[in-house]
Length: 186
Length: 186
DNA sequence: AGGCGCATGTAAGCCGTTACATGATTCC
DNA sequence: GGAATCATGTAACGGCTTACATGCGCCT
Image (tube, rainbow over all chains, first blue to last red; front, side):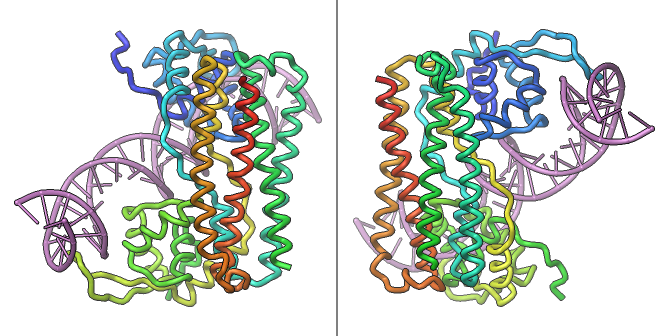
């Protein structure tokens, strides 16, 4: 059986990553995608449900029906051993350089077309967005930093700590950049 | 005429931004999208040609047929005054916070599932990618930094300088993050 | 003779967003 | 009584990628 050995989609791997940390319903996965995974990847329920079906068909996850609200049966999904293997393969596989897609920078790139006050406001908006993100990341990190498992590289919280640290460093750099731009515009 | 006053798509605004800097053929726009715009936004020719038609229908760009190779007439596009206005409106408009979509961080987030040597290799790969990007940005910036127009906030090169400076700061922060991760894994 | 660069377009398919649809329980 | 939360699904649409298609001129 399980003839198709094609790597699951990026979304599929995101879901495997979530389920490898703890089993969930589709609904719950949608919420867990918002935060903290949503700091670097997003998906909504209308993508998640069909993807779970595909993963199950490929034998990478399975489900048990549990009791819960809603007109249809509530399903708790978990990764199978094949699913965990697929996740490991994906993590360890070579990956091409990903193109950056940053709408805010695209806008900045045409900032020369607007007048000074609008340009300053644009940079200020950008700055406040980065500041808000930084605050959120720091709060999230503070919530896990004391857990001893966050220092064990075989534990999920270790990886959470790494990614949050990255977000914090990136947003701090962006804040300094915004301050520098503000001084260049003055 | 020109009844529809809807803002063009993100791609449309990217093309208006390119054409506001200098008129181009569709083919040339595709090449200019690779670098340096490609550092924060990408598009290929199969997206660009239809989008140029839409922009022209909306009266935001127009074209003149010039001589050139190829089985069909070669068209040089330029922004109209309505197009420049649309670009300014878009730059100055309020924009919602954009979700981040970073496949490399998504992978890192499941790094706890693989063993130490693979984890180290993953971080090393990530580091070399950031280093390559940083080198490219620095070269690009060096190519424009001496131009006096790069200090005039009404000139395109000023905006180029801002965006490149942002890329450089972000990539430097990412490099330091990778070095920090390497030390955490050791 | 063959490959590359110029130059424009279309088609199929995947991925993602937004909206539609259903229905129970809990809180105000 | 109405809104929010739990819970699952489908449908329509738009954006992006990959591949198909054409054909001239230049360089090796």
